[in-house]
Image 1 (cartoon, rainbow, N blue to C red):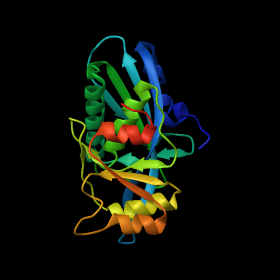
Image 2: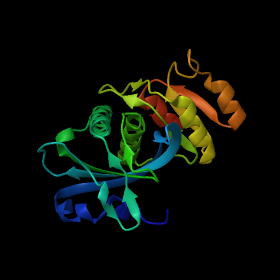
Image 3: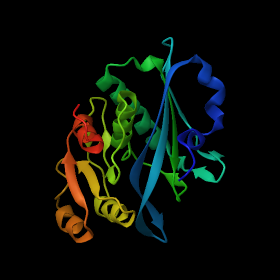
Length: 220
């Protein structure tokens, strides 16, 4: 997409920028699963994120630019409440990892994809990595994507539908997929066989710090 991250976030946030000491932008690819004609279909999307670090502590603000509030042709995906709560958890985890006061953060999210509605927490681990990377001045390496939920301590938690997400990653030309530790091989699937057949590398991660080092190429 040629449009800038500022435009992806949307003009709705422009009026509140004056109180910011610093502003950070970053985007990160994510994987999700939708239902079409009764079947599960994997899809990729992009979360565009704006972080405003405010001059005075107040309260953590997490806001979402979605649906009809999208910018131009980029119609933001609508988010279920559990996805929004997971994004908020990612913000709290990132602040904890960075030793930042969450009361000085205002974070705006916009998820862009071909689908309309998304639920679940599986993007929250990747969101936390992106938040940490943005503040530290790092970028996400091309071709790398992650699926996994997160807790307040920065641990990456299990998620579902991994074979479908691996297939979506391969179809989108992504080469490396990070997943929660212990999920490469379960009673329901063996991702190593699937990934090899699709030319995708699957790597297990335990924490945001593990994922950060792989996704940015920088030590923590």
